[in-house]
Structures are given as structure tokens and as C-alpha cells.
Amino acid sequence: MNPQTQTRAKVEHNGPLAILRFEGDVTSASKDAVLGTYQKLPPETKEILLDFSKVQYLNSSGIALVIQLLMEANKSGQKVQTFGLTPHFQKVFTLLGLTKYTSLHPTESAAKAAFG
Amino acid sequence: MMSKALTDREQAVTTELRLPSRLGYEKVAMSTAASVAGLMGFTDDRIEDLKTAVAEACINAIEHGNRLDASQTVLVVLSIAENTLEVKVVDRGRGAVKSSVRVPDIDRKMHGEEDLRGMGMFLIQSLVDEAEWVNDKRGGSYARLAIHLDREKEVSDEPSDPD
Image (cartoon, each protein chain N blue to C red):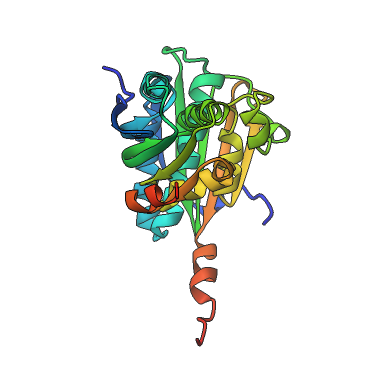
């Protein structure tokens, strides 16, 4: 039995926009789901939405993977918006400074609108 | 607030767990800590803070203290005394010291100048009222976290804005 719940990631594309919808736990075991999924996005992707609304558990190792995703997106000139985090994890992302590189939004529509 | 470990004379009520040194089992400690904090009357947001702090302390114990050695267990002791919930997370390794708590620098991380991980101790310290890391002279080490109900009361006692 693996006590670490698998992370599932679904991707939706719409022109330059990609939505990465994560489900389950985001932990050190989530490298393929988080970074692998990001790295398979088509090169025309310019805007990325991260959907955490179905994530049940997130720890600092999982957040490190999100930072790596933000780092790679930043290098590629892609913009990243985040939505679906619980108030607690919004607080954690803010404490760790991630909000400097991705804004946190309450809903998908608000996150999409933030791309302008 | 000054650090103050619970003592026998305070007649702490304790709950103990022994976790295998496998990542994922920290969720068992999280759930138990949440249940105990709920019984004590902590608010949901304080319970969420505690869950993350306990999970991070257990992950450190599993990964760094016991080095993922499945033959070693992580002991989690939850003690209630008066208005305090104390959680000790004990492993067999040489523990961290509080001076190694670093404030993560997101800019340095984003530029590859700082390890992407290493945020657990900072989170623990930020989310609970007391946090300390102790090396036991007899071997092993523990992280001690505590939250106080007084803080809940202080928040609820604040006068409401007349507007």
C-alpha cells in the first residue's frame, strides 16, 4: 500500500490558455503530475491557470514543485494565475511569498479575467 | 509568549501515536491532532494551521530524523493541559535546531539560488504559538509545537467595529 495518494492532473487547452486541474494530494510524489504535466504543454501556451479546487492535501514538498513550475513558466514568459485554494492554503502561499509570482483568485472566472 | 513545556503537575491528558517512517503517514497525525484540537474548542482556521504544522513536523521526522528507515517509528504525543494543546514529534535522528529556521526567499528560489524545499520549519514556526526543536541527550530528537486557546479568546473578545 502506498500511503501517499496519487495526484491526478487534467489539462484543458484553449489557444494560448492552458488550465491544469489538480486532484488528490500534492506532495513530493507529485513531480510527474505537476512538472510533467506542465512540461508537456504546447509551446504556444502563454497563460496558465492552476486549479487546486479538488486538492485535498498540500505540503511544503508539493509547494516546492509549484515553485519550480512558476520558475519555469517565468523563464518562458508565461503568466500563471491560481484559483481554488482553501483560505488556509491561500495563507500558506502568501506566507511563502508565492503571491509575488502568481495571484490567488477565489474562482476560475476571476482567475481568467486577471489575464486581461 | 515564553516557551513552557507541559509538566506532570498540570495533569496533561495525552494521546500517543506511533507512525511508520513512510511519507503519507503524517496524515494520520494530522487527523488526530485536528480531532483533539476540535474537542478543545479551537476554531477551524487554527485547526488548519495546526494540521499543516503537525504534518510538516512529521515529514521532517520521517525524512530527516529517521531517514525513511521503515524499521524506525515516529512517536507523536498530543497533550492537553488547561488551555494548551502540545504536540511532540519524536524521531531517532539528530534534530534540527531553531537557528536553522530560515525565512524562505522566493526571489532566490525563483532564480535557483536557494533550495526549493526547506520551508517546513518556517511554516511550523509561523502557524503555531510555540515551536522548538530539541536534541535529546539520550539519543533522538523532537519537535515541540503548542497552540493556546487563550489566543482564540483574545480574538473573540476584541470589541466589534461599531460601523
